[in-house]
Image (cartoon, rainbow, N blue to C red; front, top):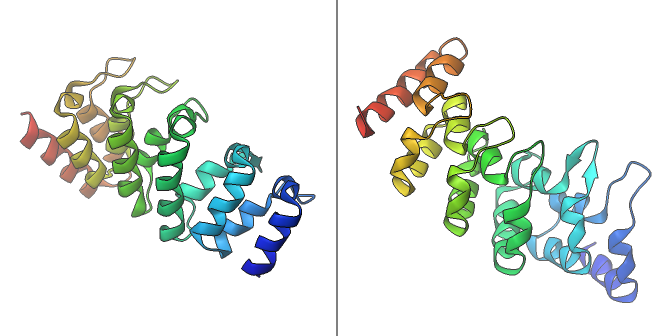
Length: 198
């Protein structure tokens, strides 16, 4: 199937832009079923595909944060995009949030690695406010995503005193958002935040 697809792309490059009646591009299927290299071939033929929306969700978000996509495919494609199309990664916004905001609140194990790769490439995103006035660290605290909280604070210790537009600190997000939903995660995040800056 991959060999046939490569042949189709060589003979008819515009096929990378053809969508199904449901709005799915070839790369939508490649993310789930093919190798990272083949995903990359599709992106090279039609770079805008990564921002194409299906069912209200950009492919970029689906690729990085859907459990339908294999970790190795998602991370390999992200690394290639960071190398070849860095502005596309840096400038991506959906619902007023950067990819780093989504990674910080992500529940998949690979969200930590996605967060690390994006934050290393664009350290300025660590302190950027979303449209709702929150930094990525605030999202990580809300979700009890301790590995991301730890990584962000190692990379940018001053983020612990970063205020949201409403004046709340990361520790307040951890307490208010987590205590009812996941009390144990709230305790762990608060414990860590206090160990960094009592």
